[in-house]
Image (tube, rainbow, N blue to C red; front, side, top):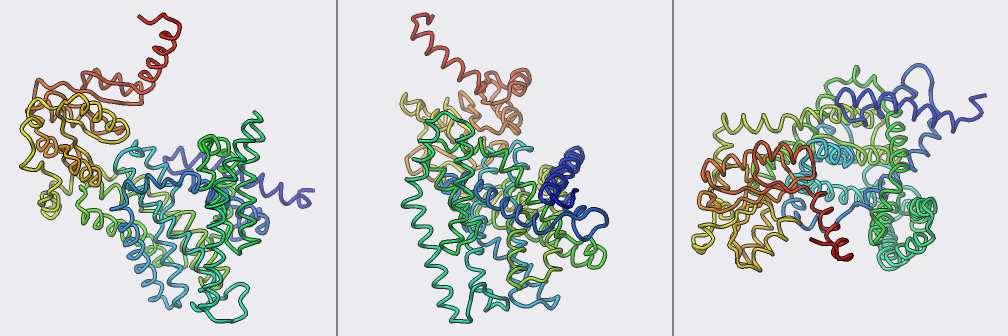
Length: 564
């Protein structure tokens, strides 16, 4: 009976086994993604026992790709990218180039052709956004400056891979593969036609889609039906992706990505992301399971040195390149290590690119297995890589002369200009962090002519503040040298406006060592953290939810004439 319902059998087996192995992975403090991939390995054709229908799994994976890319587009923030563009854009491009060269180099040494080496190197160069976001959330660094740089870096990598997915099919013939739908015509003509189709699709989405789909979402939302709203979001994602392929010859991935981007223009974008999340995650699980089905575990036995080389490029090569680039842009060691740990894995784009490479006869099947092996191992090790950031930072600072020289080198933004007015250097407020909260605090201080010095980890923000005549110093305020440069010893108050409370105690300890009478003010979003900080460190802690409730309550009481 079961063989007559292969779709249901495949979905039930894939989701059930993914649940069990994902749960076990989570209990072992590993990303659940490792469990999903292993579930695919167990029901794949390379292991004994039950074998799922690979054709159906492949189609489910296509839907998973659509919804994954739709989610990437839905969360794509140009503002977030622009905030860190001076490091994320050149850094990501150079890191992709270095990692691609490393991957292509070893592939060439194995005797692979140009096309295979290029696809292999590109697949190793791009990290998983899913793994990165969850790792940053687990470490509490998602909203920190280091987290924003890492996310901006990944946004650039994602955009670069979207471009690769567009250009690879028309270039496949010239690289030794097969160009789909090609009659062997001129390469430049084929490339020109492809770019023209993609440009037409993008123009249509930006000109028409940005107006039509947000308006459609608004009309559906007015109907007041939650299921209709969810259906509208999912139908838009899948329909646009399909239409992009059918009408413009654009990949499902690119179509879904732009569907998410235009949906983001709607004021209901957050609700759209929330309502579609369960379905997107369910199909994402099926996507990762189907990827696991393509993995041949024998590659670990037959090609151990090649697997080791792949893992070395992903975890060591990419990480060192990223860390060196971040340090070259004069960011602190902590930022360099956080970004490099974020990139020390590969994921969904690598799988999509490997699958495309195999279908275009560019990448050998064993190359896909090596990429999957590298992904499994690097994702499993990523929590350990993140956990090693702090110990490694301490060890490098105490044992490496080069590290100390890099951190102590002259940086004009790490010191207040000699022209800084004396009023900023006595009795001033030292404001740590100039994000959404810090900016509002700074504006309020400026309006009331209260002197303050900003300590901020974003070089671009410090440059803008100094251009406006505001005293600002660049660096991590948990480093005593940064607070010393902000003249904390003569300050009247320390206001820590960053969402990351990990290093708050170190900042307060430094401030009180240099200025025992200083008053400290901290923000947090966690009630337990707020109680702990009030007991151990800060004099005044503001909890986001409490302040929001107080403001709303005050407005309601004033409306009814009951305000005290």
